[in-house]
Length: 66
Image (cartoon, rainbow, N blue to C red):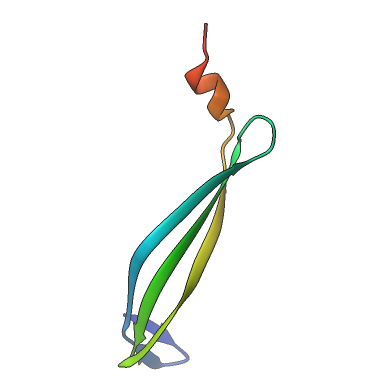
């Protein structure tokens, strides 16, 4: 439930497919894309949700430490 300007919204999101890919030479940035269905106050829809995660350490250093 979300309240915006005094109006209550009931929001439901279901992720069906998640794509993940790494950016940069050290793989510090990861982009997540999710194909999802949405329901906001009974109105149904679909779309893509995307966000970027940037780590302070390299993913490669995690796998290839000496």
